[in-house]
Image (cartoon, rainbow, N blue to C red):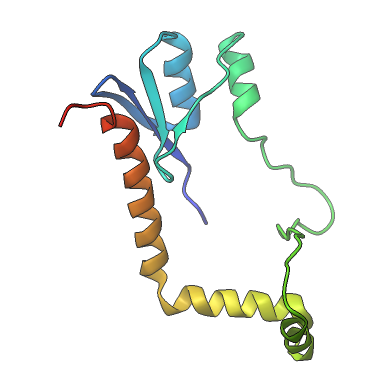
Length: 141
């Protein structure tokens, strides 16, 4: 289960807040002014929010909807996308137990287990590079 996303807001070089999205939006809406930079802590990317309207409207616009529970099967989160492969790759996938989709899921899971820290390390380095480029890109030296 993933933890709640956090964001960090800076006023120039000074960190003002590191918090979940709702708290971040509350700070930004209350202090609407130029110079505040907000970053997604997971990706290091700068984010901009539409702060127009009341705080309630801003929160409704940007917060994810509450998960609905009801009768029936829960959604599994399966996403359908197109993959381009050579014919020999499709032939190999089709011969695998469970078909192409199951084989791809198994291959991905095995690759992720082979070096679990490598993926996290690469993502953390990329996030740090993006953040440092945004915060320090215009500094002298």
